[in-house]
Image 1 (tube, protein in one colour):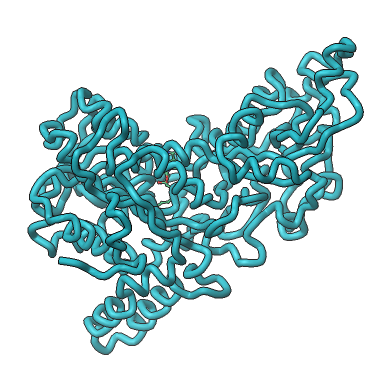
Image 2: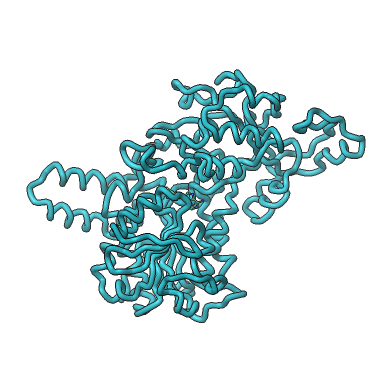
Length: 516
Ligand code: SAH
């Protein structure tokens, strides 16, 4: 995880003063990209694209940095570098302790039992599986619950990175062949001969809308109403692109000129008048290259990010005019609208995250267009972010377990942002009448409720007199639930989307018991 992040220092921009965002973009020399030395080919490509089109939304920058074919962070070859673990850039809960994945597996077993122990149609779906460790620990655990194990028809893994897909295949399928299919790739699980199917987006996982897609999975034959998807997304949502907006108050003065890639242009009196804000408005934070030779001081780089790093090559500025996103996104929820009239409010919105949460909800609970007579399945989302507020200034960059500027070395720095759990809950509830949402609850309380202490004790007892190993198990599980310092128990949260029960049933870990 980005678990190196301490509570005080999690947000790279928090230490930057707010007005730093609002600085008008100091005239960048648009023709300068040819001669400038860029840190990565992706930096050069981004700069050239911005030269041609003007500043781009933060979301577009983030998407390119993480998943561009030209050296996006997650797209690099596995042999070149490994993002995870001590030698990588960050470490995640499943990589810290096997108990984490085992308890997620047990959570699914408990949901499957509570929903009437269906004997077929169960699908395990993981979004952003990293090295595949979480799914491997889950499958090993679920294997011990024979009736559930035999109800599983297929395992779906949604993964953008070809190299991580290869790592997942190796771990989950061993030497079994991997074939290309119409929706992605497919192999066979080493555990139960089950099809393991990779797609690049959840939209390609067969469902009510797209079950016509040719697919070699056994689940092709399942009627949509009988599908029970059990979905996990761990540290996936924080990697999805965010848009950032700041509210501005009404202005008395109109803008007399605009800057475009072809230079400065004087506006006609009518056009100038239309730039004058009559009421409060949202403005989008956009990315542009820093002027060549700009220093850390000029760029207001925070102390913690300066170290020996060169000044970032890109910066965020406030767009002078409305963008298509600023006219639309901050208006979609009363939570954002309530802040519009408070000047200088900052908000982050991740429409791709909303789309994923909607997709989870529709698959579990059906939608108005594709009703599901009996909602079934469950989704659990584990990630970091505030419990009930809208994230602000939360974009951060991590490289080799250190915080660095997220606007430096595109493709070499892991970018992530706080997850807006309430926005995910709103999106899920709005998408399906057949689901309810529980949480978010702190990861510590979720894991303790799931019996992490007891499970770790069993594991330690099995290690006999090996003190070193016992201590490692002990410190690992403690780190997952610890609420202070570099612990992950408080900052990380868990949220569940389950079939609507009229509030009669709470999932285990969210205040409920295992019901059989
Ligand atoms: N869940 C894993 C990995 C978290 S890192 C763990 O906890 O260890 C994020 C994962 O999401 C990686 O597997 C990455 O390749 C994948 N990912 C990031 N952005 C994605 C996107 N837009 N679509 C699909 N997968 C993505």
